[in-house]
Amino acid sequence: MKAAVFGTGMVGRTIAARLVELGHSVTMGTRDPEATLARTEADAMGAQPFAGWAAENGDVTLARFADAASGADLIVNATNGGASLEVLTHAGAANLDGKIILDIANPLDFSNGMPPTLFVKDTDSLAEQIQRAFPAARVVKSLNTMNADLMAHPGQLADPGTVFVSGNDSDAKETVTVLLKDFGHQDVIDLGDISTARGTEMLLPVWLRLWGALGTPAFNFKIVR
Amino acid sequence: MKAAVFGTGMVGRTIAARLVELGHSVTMGTRDPEATLARTEADAMGAQPFAGWAAENGDVTLARFADAASGADLIVNATNGGASLEVLTHAGAANLDGKIILDIANPLDFSNGMPPTLFVKDTDSLAEQIQRAFPAARVVKSLNTMNADLMAHPGQLADPGTVFVSGNDSDAKETVTVLLKDFGHQDVIDLGDISTARGTEMLLPVWLRLWGALGTPAFNFKIVR
Image 1 (cartoon, rainbow over the protein chains, first blue to last red):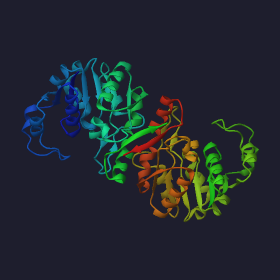
Image 2: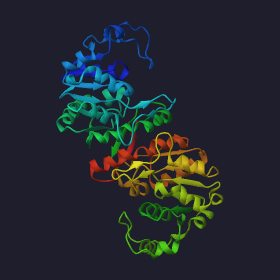
Image 3: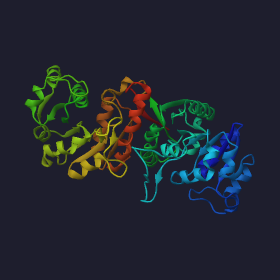
Image 4: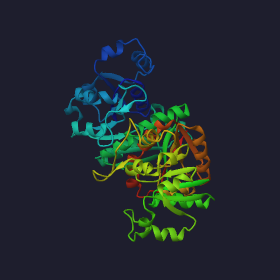
């Protein structure tokens, strides 16, 4: 598969590296590739400057959002939730038509301090906002309920837990489900249409509290039944 | 323990019966015991009229909210979330002082149809509203993340999953944790203070979608780590 990964932070890098590891062709999207490669400071999450990471991951290419999207079958939205709509608009609706957008972002709002709140919830979701903004794209919400390491390598946990998919297009959900299983996920639950992403995005507040209570982000939700 | 269970619907009945089964003394609270016993119709959830259930559960007594609370060490709030503050006010703050309020209700709002939304979320929670309204009570949020049968008999599932507790009073959380283990819960996670109830109350939207996707309410969240 030809994949574009939007977002050059820790989450985007982890997904990009995993896709390459599985034999996919990956272009990472950014606003200004030269500026991204020129950064010399660690990002807010402590990730090394992109150029250093890119040097160690030579199979991943970097391009403007539109160029990355135009050649891709799958676009992974690993941007900050608050920037996702703007970034996808930069990519250009025509470059997203018919494409699968695997939306792994969360609508976190850090403007009121920690813990963050959600800027959309309960009656709408980030995934639905993206689907409404790009009606010809096929949005699938998934992976947003765990940390990046577990998204890509769930087998780190003795029991990897459950991953959810939400979306209006069955074929797109099936393609994503195959990819999730390639990543190592074993229990994939199809919750239904894209509005079910409200539920998984609303898992973030308890996820953040669990991180605090357990002292590690190496945990996942599992649906026992 | 002397327990008062507020709410005479399916959830309250299930908890009351389980407490009796474990040897506790249980009084169920209602606004008007005569009126509750005089009902001849099944309730909105299809539960048989209370009098029939009470006849089969002779060890459970019925009293006005205030009378039920005054003699109890533990008050279980199994009312509809939208009615909880009013019901607890009926019980009288003096009857709640120093008592543990085990809040198992959810702030569900059915006024906009199905699926219900939450009338408080993310920046506040029903549990916090109760704690603020009755500052001398010791509110513990728990059990609200699963259906009533599993609250009381989690061993129905081969793996019972996880139950969460939130509250400001460590002793109250410890008492509730012992009770939860008596119910059959094995994995109890203390999330922290009462504000962490925001996270567990926000699990309801995905719980409702999972019920739809799985076709059964016989499932639970488990935190694998």
